[in-house]
Amino acid sequence: MSERLKGRFWAVNLGLFFFLLSSSPVMAAAEEAAASGSHAWWFWPLVLLIVTFAMGILAVLGGVGGGVLFVPIISGFFPFHLDFVRGTGLLVALSGALAAGPGLLKMNLASLRLAIPVALIASACAIVGAMIGLALPTNIVQILLGGTIIGICVLMLIAKKSTYPDVQQADKLSSALRIYGVYREASTGKIIDWKIHRTIQGLGLFIMIGVMAGMFGLGAGWANVPVLNLVMGAPLKISVATSKFLLSITDTSAAWIYMNQGCVIPMMVVPSLVGIMLGSFIGVRLLAIAKPTVVRWIVIGMLAFAGIRALLKGFGI
Amino acid sequence: MADQQEAKLEAGPEQLLYASILQKGMFVGLVILFITFALYALSIMKPYIPLDEVSHYWTMNVHDYLHHAHIKPGWSWVGMLNYGDFINFTGVAILAGVTIICYLAIVPILLKSNDKVYVVLAVLEALVLSLAASGILAVGH
Image 1 (tube, one colour):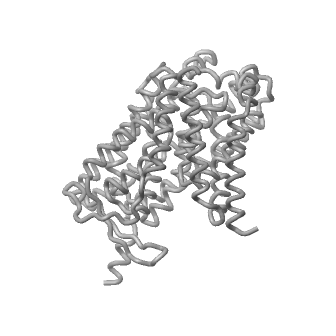
Image 2: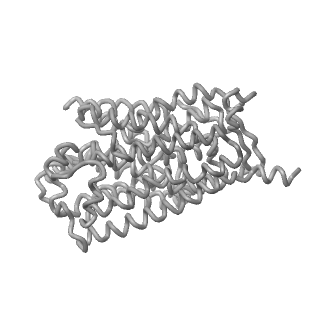
Image 3: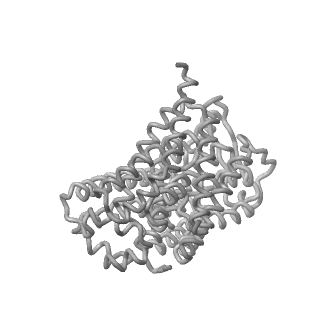
């Protein structure tokens, strides 16, 4: 079998596994079983480990963060209450960001000067978002989550990316804050000078991103990258790396709110972390042979399915 | 000229210090989390909520969970570290707390380079994260 076919084989099988798992009536029956405690205590953590392992692979291959898959899928198809899913989702996204952040900073791909002002706004707003999310009734949060997930699918379908955005001149604010840099493009060896513009508009958008990250526990890479890249004009690599690092700050503030409210159950958190991390490790290895377009469509399909499920749950259907 | 360009490619001292602390904190946090989870899951430490009862609680909203399990929100877990489930919060707190330390650690470097705006921003960020961590901001359904 050729490498390309192998990649498609893995991608399609993983997608099928997820669809079968999530659409199976067994999940609904299992929900009741869990409530009545008819399983051994290790049953759900083990299922969580297996599902998050597959999620970790798909997240890497689909180019999305673990958190954005975790919250809608686990809250939609598992017996856990949304409060604990959001708390766990934030810790999953936070751990991924903490693991990637140091390397990205050392390579100078993630920019601390760019991240600091953005993170201040996003993390303060994530606190507000977490407080709103925990104060609202669960069905309202489910409906908003469903709408957001479907919005993310649309964003994934229509958003373009610009490898090297054309920034004619840095704006006054970014110049004053000295937000610019240099990096070497590994594929060509070329040295890229970068600067940003539309800083105020970008910072304004991070108010909304922070609130949504805190409210739904999603992580926010799906929104960070388009704003840093398309609005503020940072090169794609700088945007992706800085976004990943930013999550370690934004999710920290929201994670503390959820943790202090009691939304952290270790029996959910640790299997999810281990599953996502092992899955990401395998995903990186599969990246060389998988077909990204197929995987991306599977991820979008899964998210859309989970988003609709969240909407239906919110409306009590 | 080439040397100057190479120097520009490297991350600044504050960025390298931040990365170094973040890496150590992440590593320590994860190791502690995995060790404490093993103590909990292997029943080496007695949990506050028995393992076979956890699934009764995770279907409830957090308010009902705290009420039925007689757990207080906030930092009350520190007083329950003798239980296998609550000792896991040590690793979680390190993972969630390391960023505050990173911000405070870079302040002297920023001061040395007279980068006043970023000193203010870094201190403000540390305050925002500390406020979130403090447990003062209580909410509920």
